[in-house]
Image (cartoon, rainbow, N blue to C red):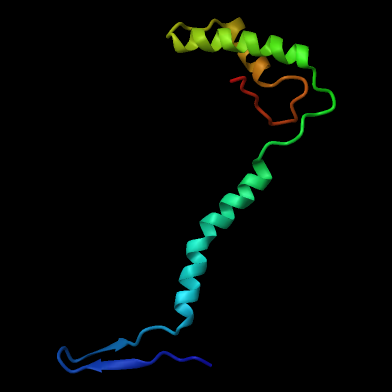
Length: 106
């Protein structure tokens, strides 16, 4: 069982802990690799998935064209009226999207 080793400093008259075990370097290396593992996990979980079986290409192109028109209007500084805001929401959640999924047509 490991125990903390102490050293006495004659200059200051104080005690201090000796350096940690060699496993500290292994632990620091693992901590450094955690962001890479997290990135790989998120890419696998939230990456692109195959298109659903009820995907309609014609409707997709119609939604895409209307989305681009509304996006251009919004980016130019014009205000969208209530019907256009509702349409924007509808375009962002097409019929083939799963629950909670938001689409952008870029």
